[in-house]
Amino acid sequence: MMLVLAAALAIVVQDHTPLRAAAQSGATELTTLWQGDVLEVRGERAGYVQVYNYRRERGGYLRSDAIRPLGLTANDAPELLAVLRFLRETRGSEALGISYGAAYLKAVPPQSLTAEPLEAIARMAERLADAASGTTNSAADVGAHLDVASQFGIHMRSFERNGRIQVCYDGELFQRVLMLSAAHAEERALAALGLTRPECIDPALGAAPRLNLDRERSAVLDGIAERDLTPLTRSRLHARRATVWASLAFELAHSGAAPAAAGQRALTELLGVQTRDLGEDLKFEYADAAVRVSAIRWAPVPAKQPEGFTLSTAPGDLGQTCVALRTPPSGAAPLVQRCTYGVPWMASAQLIAQGQVVVLAVQPLESWRELWIFHKRAETWVVDVLPPGTDDPEEGFIEYAGYVPGTRRLLVASELKNRGHFRRTFAELRIDDLVTIRQASSPELLRDFGRWQDVQWRRDTLALH
Image (cartoon, rainbow, N blue to C red):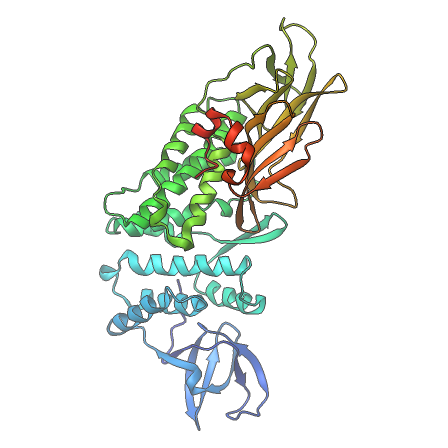
């Protein structure tokens, strides 16, 4: 965090503030200043202030009501901290709050520095990054606010995710909070949450680096003591741990390692979330965790074989796993085979429809699980893939929930995140062509779910959370 030292400083408090060539409203506009811009004051004239902006290397005049004087001495520190406390929860004022926070860090004596201003600045930087990723703020304002924040050492990372640009704060100040021994438990927990956001992981990261990153994320979260946390932060911590351990379970299974312990930890952490403590604004964090844990739900369960058939896996092309369905003896040619770059959860295999259909959960991505349906079509065995949804969804799962006897109709449950919103669906569909016969947002609204839902599914599913 650096500020320009000058005899008299001021901070711009209004967006779209024109810097003019002379002290009058009709003078030529030289540039536009934004909230948080720091200026050197060089004089006053008729309601205007003569200033110089070092970031743009340009001087000029602006109305005096658009700025506030800025002191950087130890005596100014309490007033700067008061303004920072006011602005840290004020949406749309992140650039201004970061600027005041930087001024406070310059003014406060080192022996008096606590974690509070570091956490506040980091939280505002995080909100600013979220705005840059797509909110109601105009793109021009957000871009200008990012430029203001960057002069104080606030760095952002960006990458493409689901067809849009994701902007994320690099977390430097969150890391400094974790390093401060005097930081309170709540401050440490919020810093850990800021450093472990799943949407801020570059999707282009390779498998080995991703596994190492998630191990680091789990260590950061496990290093937070829960005893002195607010109920809200405690539940957020459990939800975040659940998402990280779900990712670890998938990555371990994908690399051929045992995922059971990681999968069980993910389920345990999810059960530790008290949704009533999250409130309406943060319930999406639990929904996100529930979808991700649902995707690896079979990780702690031992593999099994559907009665009368053998499902086996074998390496395919580089990175692929091929699943083959056979009838005994096991050495016979497969009835059908399909390959995937994901993880087939063999514990989910289930025989239904009087022995004519086998269903299997397959997870191609860490937060995406499909349903494979092995069945006969015109005396030939085929494998149909049933995804949770289409139209570029972000994450989701679909699972077998029951079978309606004598109809070749399958009951399925799914949950999908699309454009930031979660949608849960229960449906009845034809096995032969996967056409949906009827669907609803609750199983109670479908008669066949009440009569024919699978007992084991009802007991173990997370789709009813």
